[in-house]
Image (cartoon, rainbow, N blue to C red; front, top):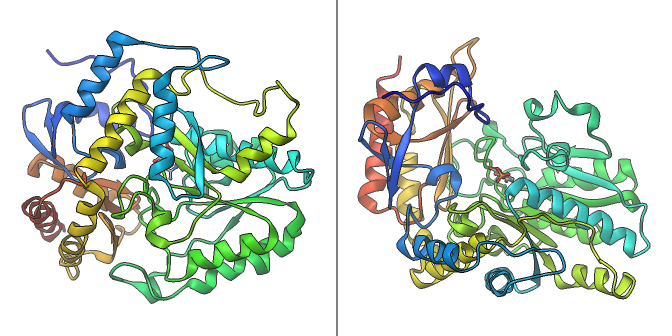
Length: 438
Ligand SMILES: Cc1ncc(COP(=O)(O)O)c(C=O)c1O
């Protein structure tokens, strides 16, 4: 019997178009979804950049199922449970050594809003309350909370809500196809774009008023924008020079996407706070987190009244037992199965396969790092997004392949367990579809 699609108002979806021909999944295992019509669909996107260990990993699903029977919920305010502390320790040990205090929430959006509130409160507690300006980046995606859309740089996500956004500014994004098209790994040109942060934004706003810079080390949602060589290092140095905190939004890059635990490790650039979510629980139970430098955490402890709440922030489901059980099991799987090393070892093959699409019809640029790549297509004149959407539909319906598109860019970010054969299928299938495009 066909399902009734009337009542569900779908997120970030063209609801009417979707409901005319619903794309439905009913099961998943390893690298594959099972579609509602029983077809096996190769997952080229790890769900939504999040199922890094592959679908329905038994160690993770068992841990969640056991937890539901043991402790379903414990109040997170003024109460606790052991798994929340265990999950925080595991995450602190996975993060760069300097970042070791963990605040839990339920999503990437909440992690971003938590981090932004943390930096404002931090400066205020230090007696530097003039630092209220937040700098983001054009084409940045930091979720959908008011803080996240304020520092985010996606016009469509802001325009209906703009009146509520203030005290922010944006750095230019570093995508420069004219100089860097078809770069393998880090683009060579554009590190100087970081100078704009100091020369234009910090100078314009007065360094003493800037609280933090928030960026995705690799911009994911707006089409895989890889930082040019040396660019992140420059941003870190400018932040240090002016006492500005640096937040890395690693909601996509965290948990092995680049072949290291975090992008911070890959680049050797350590921020002051990391926002993460998605791969933290392998997407089984919603969870997000902010990992802060101990020195930031300690200011809250030192400057707040004794026996008073140090940070006026939290969620009913912060450190939810099911999420914590999922996170602990997920991080054990990442470690025991050496999935980050695996991602690193597959990245050369992934890069080679991605760049084999160069020269196919409409392919304007290909960019990659670790197990993520973006394939930018020339838009159909007057119909932006239509070409990539057609590729997406044809991959799903005719070729049993799940890809993701944003604008006219195809983004691929498979689970880290992908094999060489599956890499060949992924790009071979995409190549067939692109070759047949008018
Ligand atoms: C970099 C980044 N930050 C934040 C978010 C928001 O995460 P969520 O959808 O879990 O709120 C996303 C989601 O894709 C993201 O890519």
